[in-house]
Image (cartoon, rainbow, N blue to C red; front, side, top):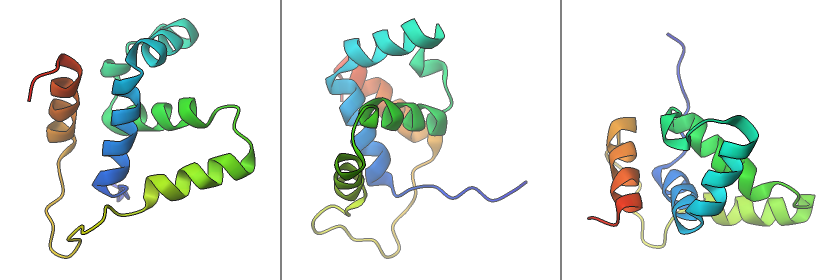
Length: 102
């Protein structure tokens, strides 16, 4: 099995937040273009789709600024020795966010 490089958790969290806040638009566009339900995608693919949806039509400068904000570590983040979330934990968190529960 080849190694998978995962982005830091905050990138996924920020992308998921964008999709949740504009869920009807994101969901509708994905359904119209592909006929697929976003939540049926594996999490890494879902994050890629959200990123592509958000930057689509942006010029190079806008995309670079967005990427810089997306990749910036959270203020005060303890990065040393932190535990990684599994894809399952992240997917469950996303599902809870969509349903409005905590």
